[in-house]
Image (cartoon, rainbow, N blue to C red):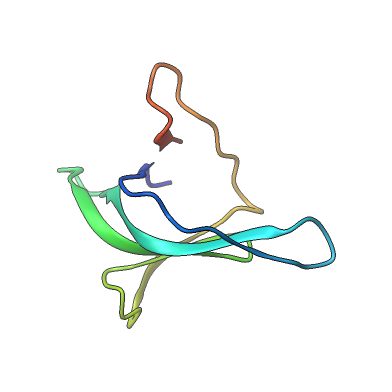
Length: 86
């Protein structure tokens, strides 16, 4: 799973469903690439319905990936600032 580093604050909206409200937001962040160089890449992220989609640009022409939060566990890394998680 890619490591994601929050760089800028987001405006958060909440979407109501049958359960508690779900956050919905979008904006640019940097993610570490999965290739051998592991450089940080700027990507446009959209959080909606417990899924984090990411695209190369804000135009959302072609999805570069998706993280389904129903299928993963997210935890903060010890000793890191609050913007890092695994």
